[in-house]
Amino acid sequence: MEYLPDLLVMLIILFLPMRLFGVGPLTVLIWMGCGALLIVLRYVTFGRTLIKWWPLLLMPLILCASFIWSDAPGISLRYGFQVLLTCLLGVFLAHVLSPTRFAIAMFAGMLVFCVASILDGRQGVAETGLVLIGLTGSKNSMAFAANMLISAAAAMLFLPKLPAWSRALGAVGLLIGAYIVAITASATAVVLSFAIVAIFTVMCFMQRFTPAARAITIVGVLVLLSPLAFATNEITAMIHEFMREVLNKDPENLTGRTYLWNRADDLIAQRPLLGYGFQAIWLSDSSETLGLLRWAGVADGRTFNFHHTYRQLAVDVGIIGSGVFVVTLLICIGAAIRQFILMPSVATSFVFSFFLITLVKSFTEVIVVAFSAQTLLLFVCCVYAFWTPPSSRAPAAPARTQAPRY
Image 1 (cartoon, rainbow, N blue to C red):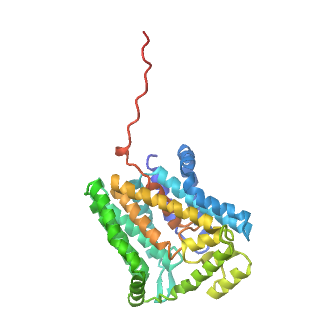
Image 2 (image 1 turned 135 degrees about the vertical axis):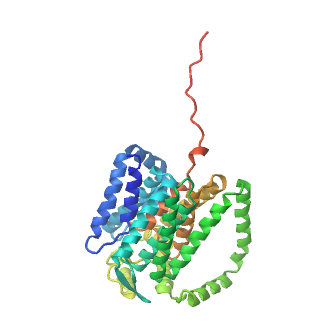
Image 3 (image 1 turned 45 degrees about the horizontal axis):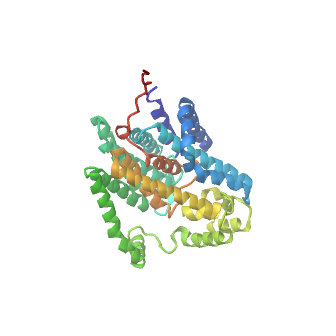
């Protein structure tokens, strides 16, 4: 029973990215059932989670509330509630397990998932031909699953007090993740995999520093990078060159994102404060929806977005909703930096390296999606930003005894 929560978290992570043809709803019910069982087993903890972390859930609550002004009230309420469930589960998982136990559970779940995907062998069409999509249903989702495995496997190699066989298994997981990234032909996944491992390794090395040295190093890096703000044109040109020569992608029209971003800006300007309602712009019958879907050649708006988290949220819930999300992320980033300076650990370094990569992806992808592994992990990372190791917690005050009366 002691490790039942770990098993349930592993099963949630295992089934969350699954998109099996014909039984997709079944996998959703399985991981939701695991989450419900975990809540029943830890109902006291769940109540404390709601009381303590409700500010973190303010953004998904706004998504739910957007049905009040939405162009498609039923759609906004339905999908907003699904996002709220995903975010709430992420917050709860981080409240149930320590970062170390979560890293182990994530590694076990993603190792089983990736091996099963390779054995399944399902392929999908990409620019380079047929590539592995496994149990996910898309190349990008399969590559993201490999990124999850690589980051967790790297943590297994550095986590202290683990047996030798678990580190060997971590090395195997690292190779399996790298193999999937290679065969999915996702250049973005290759870059992200190297970035996750590099950032995590540097953070682990910096744990040898004193808190003052870590703070000085972070400030020094920010100072050294600050002049780059005045060289945006040159940096943009270098990025475009890298995309053309290395990633073989057109930077001016990457999957039509430039056009989508311009259309999003136009829509935001028309309804800047509250937006159109969550998911209303993609799933309603408005002229804007029909025009965008026809331009993209997409029949189902549930599978499409503006490829930019903050623009998507601003279209859905306006500057108010997207502003709440940005402020929440900034507070969590500040807490993560403080935690890394004062109380770093291998497990939290693993979490924060994944958190940083997710934030980088938020400018080219939407990271707030219903029933998404990426969304769940984002909120797990936000909670762990405030994590305090048991050894650093203040001891409980001794019970007061009544003073004798004379």
